[in-house]
Amino acid sequence: MSPDATRARRLVEARLGRAPQDALEAAVVLEAWAGVPAQRALETARQLMPRRAAAPLASVAVPTVTRRPPGLLVEGLAFLVSVVAIALWAQPLADSLGGAAVERALRLALPMALALQWGLRARHLGRPSGLAGLARERRALAAGAALLVAGLGALLGEAGVLAALLTVTWTGGAVLIRRGASAFYATAVTAATVALLAGAPGLVAVAGVAALVVAAGAWALRGAAGAVVPGRWSRTLGAALTGAGVGTLLAGDPTVTWTAGSLGALALLPSAAGGLWAGLHLWKLAPALPRALTGVPAIVPSSPRGDVAAARTAGSSRGVTAHSLVRTLAGAAGRLVAVTAAGSLALVAVGGGPAGVLIGFGVVALASLLVGLLDSLGRPAWAGWGVAAGVGAELLVRLASPFPGAALTAGGAVALAVLAPAAIVLLARPARTLATALWIT
Image (tube, rainbow, N blue to C red; front, side, top):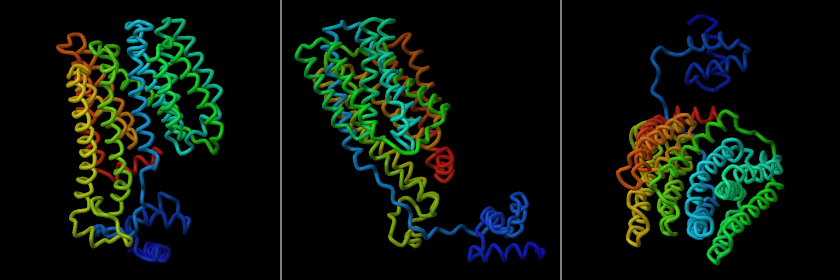
């Protein structure tokens, strides 16, 4: 080792209090403490390291504890109440406006609402600044809602007005839930359901709840403050297209009817309930992914001292961690399938719709779970391609659908076939996955 390299090594060891673990760590010390230019620091650091790398050591640091947000279960239950209530709107609206108009409205509203929700989440709601960015634009959002109703009404008549009102209601509900007003949203939707079942004019009742949701959202956003760090417009647009694709999967099968009584409209409920339970279970990945970088297997419970001995007795850090993460995903999928199957069997028993439609909603729900996981792990493009493949398959099968729900099931299955391997690969390499997610955030 040259004299310069020897002096550099002594400097690095003095600053770290130990020998450097790798060349990158040594280069950072040389650049920060000795003022060595970056390229030269990297070259010098490589000379300091032994030719044969030492065996990696498990970290003795205590992993950060990541807990599920306390209000998540309440928000999910409020969402399920809203799903049931809105499903009960189908028959009264069909009686008031005609089944064809309601079908057209729902097939248009689902993709639009999901596109707006995913776009808002990528731009503001899913960012650290949260609602603060929307608070500055609450007047523009209210004006946009009014323009959407007027524009679609002029183009499509009553069906367009209904589609716009449903889109505004569902999108505004997402903002209220993010603000912590999920109980208010569920109550407003339930009140509209009671009015419709009591014989109130369809558009009047839906317009009333939409106006109430917009007003409540504008009022709730007034208190949101803080530094605004919005998401990139490119990612916002990509998320909106992915959301629109998921909505198209749900509404693109012409054999799926939404107005054949309230039981038929409730076909979404089993998969929605299964998706809620599966999503809650996936929160176990939040603490497990950072633990993968500490060298402590994710399957081993954390101890106050970061017990390395317990980690070593559990087996290979890399293998056990990957197995644990994939097993968590499998557990979430199992919960979704179990709840969806049980609820679907109950609906079939009471005449709640064709089995093919219920299976299709379950498959799409499972694919949607993976879409959300891939997006949260920093792979929105993978999620988008999976959804696009599913939409393409659905459009092909709908040309000659052999049974009700065939196109829905085929689209969800193709999306699932594309998304599942991608999710497994990401969880099998947790260190790279976490590093990419942190870089994107």
